[in-house]
Image (cartoon, rainbow, N blue to C red; front, top):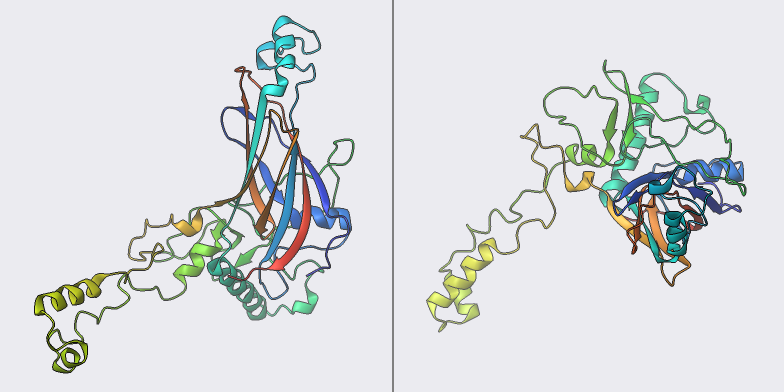
Length: 339
């Protein structure tokens, strides 16, 4: 892992947002943008494949129209029309929210990344490619968030223009005769039970769970066979004078109580069973600014440094506001995922 970035503050601007509806505000790629501004390579994992978690503070300033027209008055945004004047006056009533969606920060995603890192090294070895010949920035996998060849938000300079940056190559892996494909953190997985995978992108969490032995639905399958309900020794130890019916109830309850895993299991016998808890994002933080709050911020952890941002406006005066929103990201810490 590269050293902690000295330039640890990044600025972004979303696209047009929805009014009273969540709108995709872009995908965040912190390793890419930290590499641009610090002029050194940052990655989603260590060189052993262990995921890095980026702890950040996201700050969003209160949105104001400042004389800009709404969608209802887009013909002449510079004119102080009746509608435009009203909406400018009511700008302080507008509330803007943004939520941060990430993959799950757990042992599945950690082990999946480490195992895929090992599989990639194995791929190179089998192809006769020495790791020493790899490019300087090819020692860690560069992941997509939820689709192939992901498009990322661009960090902007003080004038609001996007930094040019360099080239962020996406990692491709391949096996057998099925060509190459990319890796993603989230999204519907693949069957992997019938035909060999031949798609363009594969989810690492789901794929990892399919690569290991699953926990049975009943974790104590032998519990209903032993001990014997009328064990003389157990009766002597428990209470030789206990009412038999009470012992029956206790033992019957113990046979099926709390023996099922509290997490979703994957049914590999069902080829259509490819959408699971592990393929879904979690909300790692939400920031809000609005009436009485000129600036809002939230601290959240972003596994792999990759996140999806959704945002929305909500005006108390029923304004139709679709303007973009600027927000800042300050990196507070970078640590290895524990799992």
